[in-house]
Amino acid sequence: MAGAVAAVRSGVPVILFGDQAVIRPLVPRNVDISIVHTDDAVGMSDAAVGVRRRPDSSMRLALREVASGRARAAVTCGHTGAALVAAVLDLGVLSGVERPAVATVLPRSDGGQLVLADAGANVDCRPEQLASFAVLGAAFAESLGVESPRVGLLSNGSEPGKGNMQVRATLPLIEALPVHVVGNIEPPAAFRGECDVLVCDGFAGNIMLKSVEGAAETVLALLKAELKQHRSAQVGAWLLQRVLRKLRGKVSWESIGGGLLLGVDGVVVIGHGRSTEEAVTAAIHLAARSSEGELVDRLRERLS
Amino acid sequence: MAGAVAAVRSGVPVILFGDQAVIRPLVPRNVDISIVHTDDAVGMSDAAVGVRRRPDSSMRLALREVASGRARAAVTCGHTGAALVAAVLDLGVLSGVERPAVATVLPRSDGGQLVLADAGANVDCRPEQLASFAVLGAAFAESLGVESPRVGLLSNGSEPGKGNMQVRATLPLIEALPVHVVGNIEPPAAFRGECDVLVCDGFAGNIMLKSVEGAAETVLALLKAELKQHRSAQVGAWLLQRVLRKLRGKVSWESIGGGLLLGVDGVVVIGHGRSTEEAVTAAIHLAARSSEGELVDRLRERLS
Image (cartoon, rainbow over the protein chains, first blue to last red):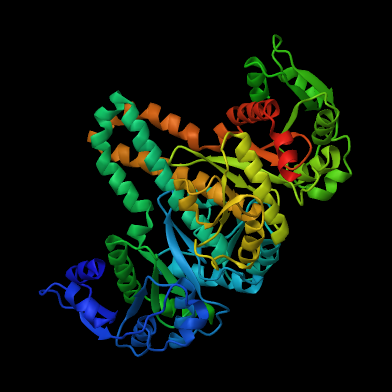
């Protein structure tokens, strides 16, 4: 709620879907937020099946508001798999898409952006589905301003022939697509900027995403612990606070907000299940930016 | 070569296997290193099949030196899959092991150690094989001094029912084993210390390992770039150099050296294919420490 209120205050109009009796008291008087009341919600244990039986859940009502054109984009911090199914049901899939994918943007050490697709929606993929993420990811990278994005396939080794069975079956399929393919890519090479789009199934992508989150937290925690031990380093420590805060803003999912669901006919942002106020605001801003851009049109063009 | 020489100078006796004409000139006069000559080597493109046809390759000769008891441990920075096959051929598998696994240790933010098994040797695993890594990883954690190690299964969500098909099939198998299972674990929770052993297939494990490497490099690179921009922070920058160097030593594979091959009848360390001098020395020290410990005996005990 605090994240939504902050987004409204920053100029993005927001409609909230859910239990009015719970939501209304949390909206400050001077903040203009619309509320669409519903008692039903998709729970974290509902998964894909449950969402079909809940047409009046808050998640599905919000998506239908996008389908009807009354809203420009939808944001959910609910169950990722359920959101994927709900978006397919209520928005429909763009022609030519095997499976929609969630794309997330990570910072690279060369200052560029790395598009990860899929970042967690499709944990079990056939090679054909995995290959189609290359097209979705490339279109997304283009909408971010990257010309002729270089597409890599996430693998445990860069040589052709490396990877598990799925990767080895997928590489030739991707190489046959009209995208600029740079082959198998390992995570450190991706972070150094050897590709703009990293294609993977939602399981491997989510492991990568969360490993980065865990590693960044660990590095910052170890750095703080080290600084406490060195009295001499403490002299510079307070100067570093600002730098560390800025750095945290670059590498944390809180500042990125969430992933974009690519391949459905509308803009949908899927936020982290444990989103903070800051993360919810960032997710709403990401949705607003993406709806202003030409992401869905660009995807449609690419796919045709 | 420089890494091996440094290890000898630090007191670890080393035997080198390979082309004498290439190796000999690289050994300084006052350094005592034995060389076992062979013209044959397992190449990075040989993979599992090639190693069977190369009984006199440097990798296999080194492993047979361990099998015969003339060496206490073997170290290779060659092809991981080939090393696994070669170790199975020349050392044999401990009774009760489905598939040997490579275990690597990562630093946790709570100061503890996280054992990752498998870290890259078995990229395609059946659930039964994956489950057996729990026993191998737990025995390894015990050999590092952890009592009743908590074993987690790497997943994209902590709730039971989360994960891909492989993870969902593996969790009940692990829960039936005589190890302390804490369920599905996401990378950030593992780094915070919610488990001591993280079980995964070699593909996911390697993606996690290399994502951590890439993220740590990225955080340190961004930190340096930020420090350069802030004149005020530069005052503290030189004080930080020492701290950053120590931190890098904690999180880089160069200081960890490599992974231990668990489940074969001998101590084998598999180093990174792009090991630096420092990494090779660390791999040799890891092999020496592990051969002094009771790792193989403990594994045998656990497995019976």
